[in-house]
Length: 372
Image (cartoon, rainbow, N blue to C red; front, top):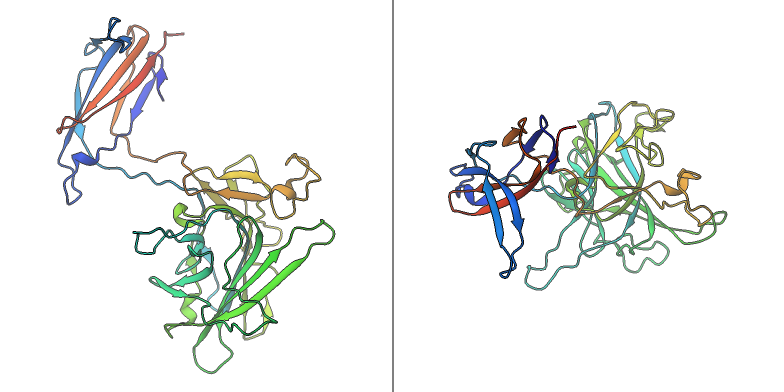
């Protein structure tokens, strides 16, 4: 907060990169001083900047400087880990996605660009690569891609073709034990594109392919058993996500569970920063998705058809949650200093000056209001 009245407490969270040693340790001291601003006109023809010392109300203080990172990018994470029965031999994650921005690799960066995470669950994750193609990550940085798809198969469109921006896709990733002998596992992506059409007659394009395991070390342990589920993990995804759902199957019986393990209806609880689990259809209940860095709620979803322009009238049309890689709400920094505004201090504009040992300075304006 930048203003207050006598008796209020102002907390200061400070990051000072130059106050840190090369090894990351804190070896610098930051000095805080308070002055009262009388005039801040820099015009040479005017009185200039005039400040009065306010040490009477705030004696100079010192505290250890440190670097505190800025974690930008909105994302969502389950409040509790998702528990999966040990007898599970197949798990699928389904989600609707609407990518809006795919950064291209630029000259001079080695051909690399940011990989956007759609969802992450334990050692599994679905990612959108800089070229617009989807890939599944598992384990410690290993990837499964569909580069081995048959170019001549005209009846089954290649799932590794780039996703088009601003189109709705239903993406299902399936991890399970193969029907073949041994402990091999399979991973599949089922991608459906929703074409723009009337609400009654939606045209759907379907593409499915079994992804090849380039490393040859897939195993049943790929299915997470006790891990948090996260949307747009790392805050790197740009686009809308809607209605994630996790289903499991025990292939010893060959039957899909009667209801999803857990799912979330993103058109619910629009005015809050969490999405409750859909307990009516989920086997695991009361595990909401908690939103961080304030992604945009009530964005146009896959069911929007232009018949309603107020989300309160038809929430199902506005179930999209729009994530941005540059969203920020709260840095969540640790507090370095607190100051309780003393009684009797004159109201006015004050300046808190923060100076480190390298004489780098930052000024923070504070507006002291009179007591009520």
